[in-house]
Image (cartoon, one colour):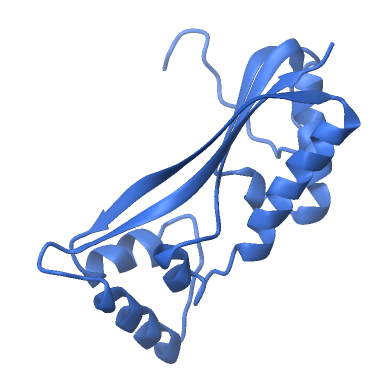
Length: 167
């Protein structure tokens, strides 16, 4: 344990912290996991707990590229990822935030073989993906089409937005 550090369970749309408690909030690949009807409330809650002039750093995966072409077979996040970006746009329109910066970049993901892909992307401990045999066969086919002697490398496009809480 680190002195002064504590972990609190909660949900983004109902943060169990005081108003203006933080200088910075980080949302790393998380907003698209908030239920879509609660995304606006989640960003309002972040605004509540971040002090005026403080920031919220939001990094969200973009639904694009070969990796998503495979993953969508058993976990299609196209709608929720678009909803996350729309929720950020809507939060900016309310005036509770201004956008201080925006960046797009790609994160490489390398897999030695299909077994490594399956372990990391399908059988994660926090997810409950249960693709049927036909889906798994298509996932394998698409993966192996991109796999060479050194494995497979994909790029995950990311969209980062740094928001500043208005006063």
